[in-house]
Image: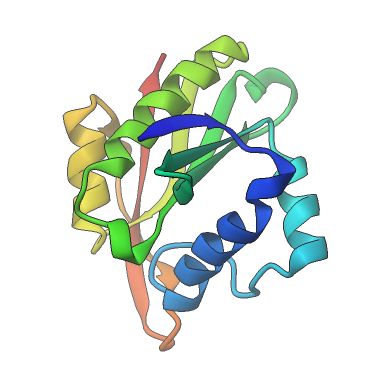
Length: 159
């Protein structure tokens, strides 16, 4: 498996994986799935998009972009998506490590996750193992697809 920058030929597979996470309704804040037009625009608007390619198929991806502007413009944010069929293979760790490298290359000095859902224990354990620090807990900060509220845990790591 290799992680590389996305190209336009990857967009259909990327949208499929992204939309899978959106439709699950337990991790991403987005409620609307991406179509071919909105997906192309969404991914093009990011500072960097990395894809995990395994035997010619896209199996995961991440988006990287500023978390804020101006005096906080050195802080970036990222989101990660792995195909349900490929979860449990430690692709997330490889994506996060590549993201950290790309963030530094782009001049960011802090990577912050604003809304890690508390029940997403696999992601939280990964981030903590990689040295991210939890900033606290925001009670009821995430509304799941079924309408109940879960806590979110912001994390950050200095690059």
